Image (cartoon, rainbow, N blue to C red):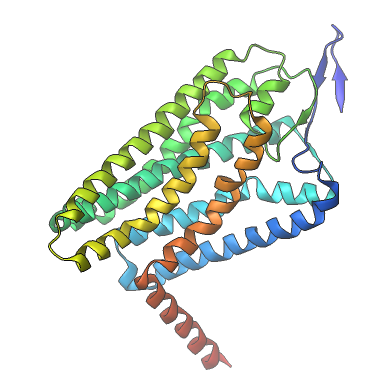
Length: 319
């Protein structure tokens, strides 16, 4: 729906998220696949939080951060996936400018929060392996809370400026966004305002946050590997490597896609490919995170068994 200004310039009153609607013959199957992935993501991350909270043996900094990541992975896909599912089910593509800006802000704020949180988790593994005697002193419960809250605060503050600038743009061209959520490049493409300054700001922020945090993670891993290689036994080296291997898998999967999507000078190129690639950090990674951490962690396995046994016992006691 468009309205006309006095100077005959069309002003967009709503956007159309065309997303994957062009795949008309596969909409139903896409709806089923994404629905299952989303529900499993929510259940898996909630289970991780319950296990970490209820099992005293997991009341350690590493699992505190894993629980924090699981909490984040509940909200991160929830900003975009329900709207996508609604569009696939009802063929309703319209979204208001206010709703679009809200989706943009929360999607990128939660994404930035995950970047900071993964960096914090890498620092936790660095201290645990390279300074084990001082680990519980350096990474105290108070420090854990500060690091978690700091990741959320930095993530939400970092996106305010570009979001405000985009909200103040004039949109007077086509209202179709070739994406399943309100992404930067499709929005700038629809604007009739000057957008080069916003592109440069977003690129600089992406460069600083994504590559800056990625650099810190790489440095921590180098220190971890150097320390691990000095261990006298192969068993000790293997056990230590296994403690951060899962974190490394998550980092490579998440950072590989967001570096491709955002760390390049032009946001206008490869927009259709960006839409496909964005499925990985937005939908796939939140699903894989709890699976990766539980499959490679014996302590979580044992805690999960005890939690299940406890619930079964309580259920049988009630009935």
